[in-house]
Length: 199
Image (cartoon, rainbow, N blue to C red; front, side, top):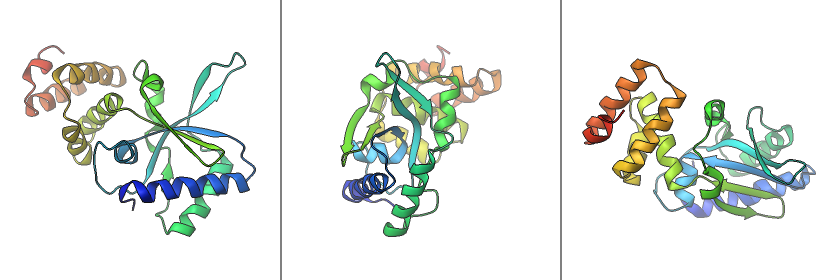
């Protein structure tokens, strides 16, 4: 389990060292979820894993390109396994569980809003911003009927405008009438009948 920024920072530094031992010169990834929320100071709660959405590369023109974090890079898996052993972390502590969100598109401008931190000489992590976390958390809370995602969403205190944008993005990932109705009901339960009425 990860409790507080200090342990998270130590784990990422250790991961950088193990990547170096694997011969990795440079690795960038986009991280969301509880780890990102803790690192950026939006919430303070324990979390059991690091959710990786994408790897970041440059194309031949030097432009940033995101690639889905599935499959995980073999050298990253090996490095993460060693860190798991050293810090007594749970299996799959570093995973690409939310990477399927890439299938239908990320919120516009996501990388411009991400907060970037460097660890060691080879590891760069882009943590999702509050605005984008609202998008992800709303979608996950509706999809999974609340739970920790709902709690996180409430901690982020989204405005009606932010919720409307997040809801419209969420619908692009599931355009079925059933999902739209569940989403609207969820927004109403949050006290945002006005947002639900616009969908």
